[in-house]
Image 1 (cartoon, rainbow, N blue to C red):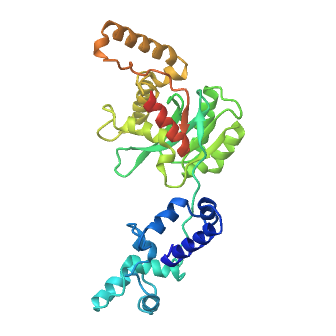
Image 2: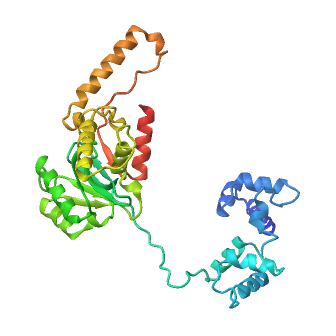
Length: 355
């Protein structure tokens, strides 16, 4: 508020008080607190002493309207009219001219509605995030993707198609082919649904936006099986994290070949042994270090209860070692989210910290 406005407010409140009004209602009528009124009245001047007051009053070194007009005029010269401010400013400096910084030029051009995309460049599209999915039991949400396995011929790769259950992290189906086709994915999906007894409208299948994932044959198969498709945003690998994590576990493991696969049969043999180990022996960190198939079969609750009993027995035998702390949390992970909302993510983080 300017000094003149403050003085006018003080005068109006004074007149109201002299006419018999109380200070508080008079100040409220002007949108002031009585404390502000008394502070203003007790001071010798009404200049704003706050640190940000200079910014509120206006920036003395800001560009004037005439300088802004000159800046826009230079930006519209044929030599510069197709260049961004980041290139205009250095070119002017080469000629011994400085008008404003790049950020100021961008800001002024935006104010004057001259920040347009050049040529035939399309406007950026805002792609909404995929819907959040939650699995509270096996065979509710599956995730699948394709990864490359190097062949003996340099530059050629085998394609590993792999489907996993996000609740148990178990691999529920896989195949290896020499090419990427929606037909291969369709056959794999039919086999997986048959093997696990999937009924219509029972599961959601999440994937990225690759050609085999969105191919007509694959989509027709999903419709026939009653499987609901779900897709990631384009070029966003974080939207399909469980499949990406599975491939990292596979390729960064000690048994992954350091060289190339001699033939497709060799690749299939190796993946067969990997899946057997991963499903039955691998202690997965995301599900409290039980194996994926143990969780898929519902055996994880008994395993975790046994671990809880072992820890409590150890604490009772030597309580000083825990120094009043709780034993490790072996509570079962009851729900697994895929692409949770920010609010859900924060709630999960608070729950894990509390545990």
